[in-house]
Amino acid sequence: MLDGVIAYTPIEESRALGRITGARVSLKCENLQRAGSFKVRGAYVRMARLSPEERARGVVAASAGNHAQGVAVAASRLGIKARIYMPLGVALPKLAATRGHGAEVVLHGHNVDEALAEAKRYADEKGAVFVHPFDNVDVVAGQGTIGLEILEQVPDVDTILMGVGGGGLLAGVAVAVKARARELGREIRVIGVQAENAAAYPPSLAADALVPLKKVSTIADGIAVGRPGQLPFSIIRELVDDVVTVSEDSLARALIFLLERSKMVVEPAGAVGVAALLDGKLDNPGNTAVVLSGGNIDPMLMLKVIQRGLAAAGRYLVVRMLLDDRPGSLATISRIIAESDANVTGVDHTRVGGSISMGDVAITINMETKGEEHCEQVLNNLRAEGFQPVVIQG
Image (cartoon, rainbow, N blue to C red; front, side, top):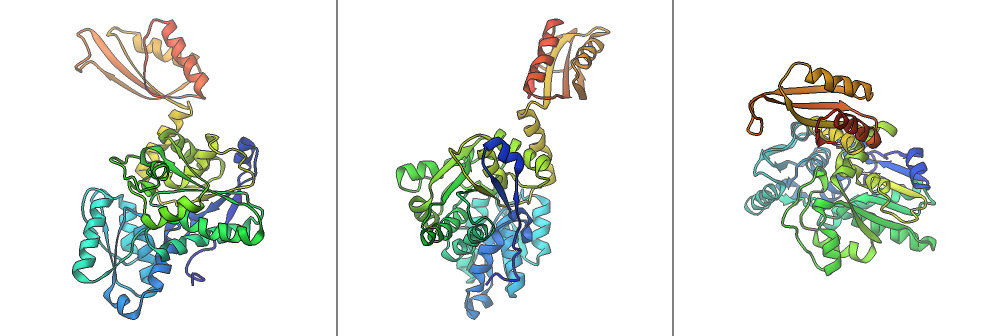
């Protein structure tokens, strides 16, 4: 069904991750998929199975990016009219890409949940077919094709690792891979990864019931889902071996790692599996395949994530100091930083502010550093000269 519609995405071995983990690690590059993520798989399977009457009514969906583009691409291929609700603050590149694929886009609400509610209301009122991003059997089946491709590309795989939001991708891959593993008479682990600030699956699995989160806050917007889907949850609790979590700093470090070591542009949600490996969250991973689920990242978000990732790795340091407003103070600080072999990238010098006394000045300095030990060396050298640097970032 998907032949000629999706790309058979490559799988690339990561020697850098292999050296860190002591295992063979391969990256399934769904960031290179049509529309920039795996979502087109499930959307197309769902929509291709609509009856002629259903197609004539059109489809409606809600998304902040990847699902929107997947539905738009599938609708264009199938000749179906698509209406997609996106939050008011959606990233401009994702908005433009969705419209570029031919879908009608309506901006509504301040988050995906509000856009989703409006999409459902429209479906009920107009009779359009609602295409859920993950809680649908056809969507789950479409996402599972990634697992089948991995088994073709890495037949001896031991562990498959991927991000999980609502659960459609993880559930689909688990069904496909576990069935094939039984036929082969072997075990293949399937593990999900969530951002710890948007991790609804661990408490839900522990309670054996859906446990919605009160708040979701993560840079991994592609998996920022506060409530698991009922269908994916029922599959995941039966078939998936584990769901682990990673921090925001770990996500940022993983994104930079992929940029520098694999030359891959990946969105935070697509980098969670790599973050889990870098954090050592898996015991005895064996021959591992990591799904890089998407590459649709807004340039402004990328800028922020890179800065955060560099700071988390000790390669970017921002300090603030209060000092006497007299000639030579800034020159002394510049000398100390230069002698410490750090590189200043920005300076903010101000005499006005609620915490600044008369006769004082506040200086904020951004600098490039070479790691955590180097950061501590710079701070110690400043303290040795009588300054009291407060770390703002680093």
